Length: 165
Image 1 (cartoon, rainbow, N blue to C red):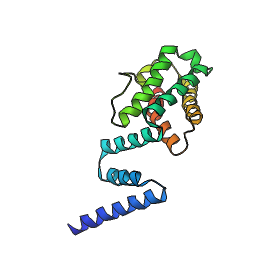
Image 2: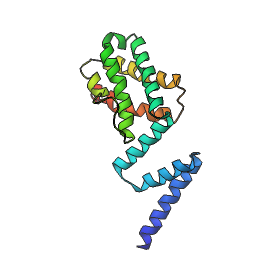
Image 3: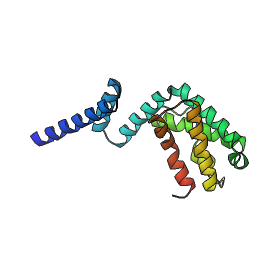
Image 4: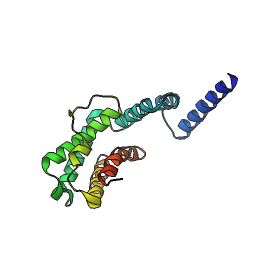
């Protein structure tokens, strides 16, 4: 029994030190400590809430999606492969993914990035253009690291699936 308590205190101490060294706020530290003690889905929800908050809530996520949509429309590769409805479904899917990660109801029904993009034959060039469109949207919205990396990670399962990875 004493050993389990020591291990738990050590894990909590490590999580606290990491949070302090990372410059996290007290709320983020508490969330990190809580996440360290919970499993799978709860940890994913905490990460989603953090991303949602760092992007400025649903309003900020919607603005990011608008920029993403505009970038897809302007991209020479994507504009040839994706029609306006697919671009809308893809940007709505991004909003839905972030909302779902945060434990919120997706605001755009069943729109899903992978469903929207499947069968569009994007290939490596299309996937690179899609990734670039989201990265540029993040830059336009002044999203900085590590939030930008967390945002780009939302797209990774979609791009991997499209490339058959």
